[in-house]
Amino acid sequence: MNATPPTYHTEVLIIGAGVAGLFAARALAAAGRQVLLVEAQDRLGGRVHTLMPAGFTRAIEAGAEFLHGAVPLTEGLLAEAGISQQAAAGQTYLVQDGQVQNEDEASFFTHLPQLLARLEALAQDLPLADFLTQEFPGAAHAPLRAMATQFAEGYDAADAHRASAWALRDEWAAGGADDSPRPVGGYGPLLHWLADQAQLAGATLHLAAPVQQIRWQPGRAEVLTTAGATYHARQVLCTVSLGVWQREAGQPGHLSFVPELTAHRAAASQLGFGAVIKIVLEFRAAFWHERLPELEFLLSEEPVPTWWSQLPDPRPLLTGWLAGPAAARRLTASDATILQLALESLATLLSTPVADLQAQLRASYVRNWGTEPHVYGAYSYATVGAPAARAALATPVAGTLFFAGEGAYEGAASGTVEAALVSGQAAARAMLALPPP
Ligand SMILES: Cc1cc2nc3c(=O)[nH]c(=O)nc-3n(C[C@H](O)[C@H](O)[C@H](O)COP(=O)(O)OP(=O)(O)OC[C@H]3O[C@@H](n4cnc5c(N)ncnc54)[C@H](O)[C@@H]3O)c2cc1C
Image: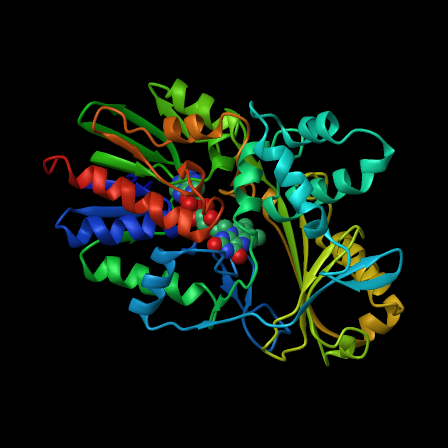
């Protein structure tokens, strides 16, 4: 006998138990709203995932890891949860043509004043690649163009042919992401604390419940999951990633609205959502100390170009980072292929045979966010026209549908945990400004 699929009723249904959804759930439940949160995956956290894969001696971060720049909401929440931060330490090295240089000698930052002067004079926004060919043409400027492109692709996970020159001007003028601390123990404990807080305030959390369709009319919504469950709500807060918004009908992970939200969908497709592959390697010892004693960051033009250690934590762990178009080209690559690519890059950078690295390797972990179910990318980047598109994506519909998540955030903390918190908070406030449903 087939069981009837369950039906639930709630005032507020939140879709997605990532940073934005959990933060909004806590605020709404604490204000007395009846809140039910549905999450597609069988774990909470979304792009925050602190885990301990087989072979590792301690937990690692598969997703968010640092506190980048001014992040007051994140810092306030960490303090409230009693989680301390650890400042990063060490030296950034650049490896070019087999030569190790430290960051002050030759780097993106030597080109920065020249770049910023032209960017500040730019009267109309352009994609970065167009700006570079227009303002810095010819062979003489090739190193500057390569550095700027590499930085936008590697740090912002952006496609230089779509990324907004104005947005990069604002980011670079603010000084980039120097001195980024980490939450001690990772971001995972913060997310679990937030979920506990939301549940203590009365919110209910349903995991492994992927929403497929939202049928709505002013004042009511009927939300259907792939397993056939139905949720009836007065208001829905949708916090899914830009990657989910950009899925076509018929692709796995597509979320449909009936009637369709044409303006929101168009805004989402106008925005950029970058791919990232993270490769985490734990070694038996920090054998790189001989060559690079203070290694914090290592930047290069290798296929896996960026690496970092855990300094001041002496743990012999290196994280490889491949972002932007280079990561998007490897959506179908196996983890074994990516691991091999990473080991080859690292072997070149450390002038060590791959076999020696393999002999030192205790554990490895590859996470390809471009293929992550229910996320399909790592974080958003600003394209030309992004401020208006983000505002359109965050616009509520008929006091019934609300939107949040890092992709809908407009401001200096773009692409971060802070962005997701700010946007979750803004959506919760907008919902609370209306009379209870
Ligand atoms: C590799 C990587 C490194 C990063 N590094 C940093 C960093 O160092 N510092 C920093 O501040 N930020 C970093 N970020 C960005 C940060 O992780 C994100 O901005 C933030 O976690 C986004 O939170 P969110 O709630 O907006 O979205 P998400 O985390 O994507 O949450 C949305 C949730 O919705 C769920 N969902 C999707 N579709 C459905 C559906 N149909 N039904 C139900 N649920 C659904 C998803 O499973 C997910 O749990 C990084 C991200 C990645 C991927």
